[in-house]
Amino acid sequence: MLQSDYILRLIHEFLKALHRYLNKDEGRRGDELTHLYNEYLGPADFFRTAPMDDVMDSFSRYPENERLQRMEMLAELYYADANETTGALGNELMRRALALFDFIDRHDRTLNLSRKAKMAAMRRKLAGHLES
Image 1 (spheres, rainbow, N blue to C red):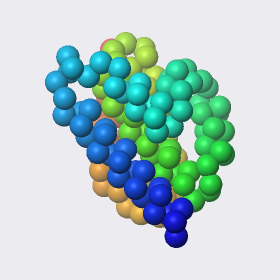
Image 2 (cartoon, rainbow, N blue to C red):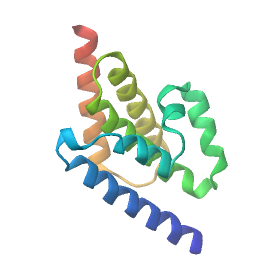
Image 3 (cartoon, helix red, strand yellow):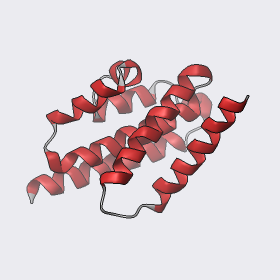
Image 4 (cartoon, rainbow, N blue to C red):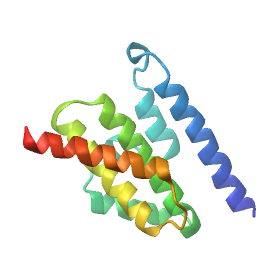
């Protein structure tokens, strides 16, 4: 019970911090996204550059009942980061977000329409980049 309360509070706190970040003027955001990676998941550089197999393996340090929620937190960070980053790195972050959201969607027992909408938007955006 305490463990589930903890992860729910953590997710709530994370979503509030991400919401504050997304609602700031772009010029005032600075390194806040990096801070969100570091504070809630671990080193931002690792999550931005490590192979996805290593990223997925990194979730083994969490109890099994927290892993999907932690993955969703990372997927949301990748999604926000991808929308802030241009070029090849932005596309890679978008692919990472989509891969995580897809994994979560296959393993989560709840229907999340927001996640499905983000996934569809990412697929369209990535398909557009392949065509250009």
